[in-house]
Every structure is written in structure tokens, then in C-alpha cells.
Image 1 (cartoon, rainbow, N blue to C red):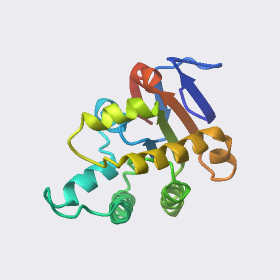
Image 2: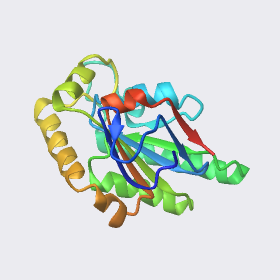
Image 3: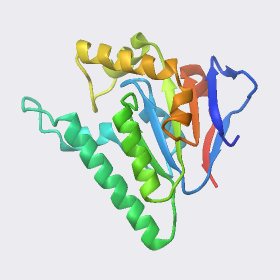
Length: 200
């Protein structure tokens, strides 16, 4: 299925749509978002093995010092993420390959979504949002099971949860006000039903 507009799929079903794969234009900037621990990296490893996503968690794990030292501030990790995304897009444009660019963040903050949109617009690419949703408890269990990436404190996690619920309370504005070509929201069951993400 080629996503257009808003698609909200929960419990493996969605009003008016039945699909187990998503197909985007080849030159897409795909913003993969969700709460820390929701399963973004797991989905990316399963379905995006040929298109290595630029992941905030990977950058935090790579650039943060060893245990006991002050960890890298997320704002610096975001800066590095966008520097690498721009460099990859520039390299693709120079080679003429126009490969898809996948950026993986929490996507809960409007400023981050707008930065990804600016990246897409600067390189004349369409920007699509793929959002994974789960309860705060499911995300907390997901964070507890991993060894890398961003593991926020309880207070910070609650702040993320609030921002995320605000975002999902009015997803239409992601299309109308922010300008994404499509917004797909999947819960864990629906994400597990997804068998392919294609770029054509």
C-alpha cells in the first residue's frame, strides 16, 4: 500500500485499510518515530536492513562516554544526527542514486519533526511519518530490555508520554500544518503484522 494522508491502524486492523506492507517513493525521507522503548529499532532491523536508518539511539550509544562519565546531551546527539543525514543526502544527490533516507527519533517534539521536514525540503524529497504507538508500560519494558540508547528517568519518560499523547490527539495537523505527505500510526500488534517496507 502506498500511504497517503492519515492511516491509523490498531490491533492489526484499520478502518478502510488492510495491508501488510508499505511502499514509499524511492527518494523518500521516512521519519520513524515513537516513544523510547516502543520498538523502532526492532522494526528497522526487521524491515529496513537494506536502508540503514540514522538512529538517535545509535548516535547516543556511539558518542556517549563509558559508564560513570557524563553522558552526551540529547541535543548534541540530534545535531549529529542531522549532520549525518544531510551528509548522506548530499552524497546521494552527488551520485544521482536518490536512495531513501530513514531517520529514527522519538518524533514527539514538533521541533524535531520540523527539522526532519526541513532536511527533506532542502533536498527536494517527500517526507513521510511512520509512528509506532504503545502504552507507557510497554515502552518501559522495552527500555528495560535494551542495553543501548536513550533510557530516560521516570520524570523525563512522563514528559515524553505527555508530548506523545498530545501528538496523537490531533494527528491531522501533521499533514495540514506541518506538511508530511503521509502519517501512518501503528500499535505494536499492527507493527508486528507489517511484512515489508518498500521504496520504489
